[in-house]
Structure formats: C-alpha cells, structure tokens
Length: 162
Image (tube, rainbow, N blue to C red):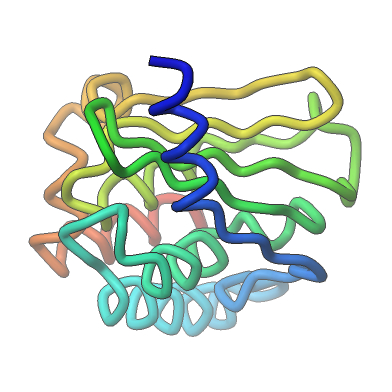
C-alpha cells in the first residue's frame, strides 16, 4: 500500500514554483470585479477536465482557481486509485497559512475536475482539506455543476466578488 502511494506520488508529482498571483484576481470597483470574474470564469471553463491525471489542465486550474495568490507552491496529483486528490504544498506563503481562506479556490478546483474527490493544502505542518461532498453541502448543490453548467460557474464567481 505504501509503495503504491509513494509510486503514485512519484509518477504524478508536478512541481511549480514562483506562482505568486492569480489570473482571476480582481481588486477595486465592482466593474473590475466583474471583468476579473469573467476572465477567471473563461479560463476555468476552458481548462476544466474529466481527470485529475490531466496534469497540464490541473496545473492551469489550480492557478486560475486562486491558489497562486497564496504564494509559491508544488502540486501532487493522486491519480491511481480513489479517492483522487490534489495536494497543494505551499512552499513560500504570501501570508500566514491560517489567515488564508482556501474554501473558494478548493471549491472551484473540485467543480472543474470531474473525478477530483478532495483538495488538500499544506504548509509548515498545517493542513486544509475539502472534499467534493463537503463543498456540495456548503453550496447546496453538486459542486460538479460548476464544471458542467457555465451559468452556475459564473454565479458562484459573482457571489465571491460580492
């Protein structure tokens, strides 16, 4: 079992460094928030994928979901057996880990990767985790609709800007 997990990690690990800003970040007026969320929605919609193992799309989704604003990070993709997961290890946090709200980017990632079951974010011995079931309960509907219904994705992003 440990050998399989280690093998999965080694085969599916993708390292990123220097990711310090999110393409979807929008600051300022309501109009700029709308433009930012529209661009973010377009990028998320364009890169959504059925499989955690589609590493190039998952890398893009992680950044566009908003994890880039947390600081530099590395990714591990758990793709060989359920539960399929993404672990984001923040290597150089932009601010203290406990002050960052990971719920929105984790929800976006869970919604735009069809077979993704869980998102884990770690840094300095601290961990944040969100499962698809937890995200669905918070949303009041299946989180996966964010990746199948563009209007639902747009509404969710607008709710974050409010």
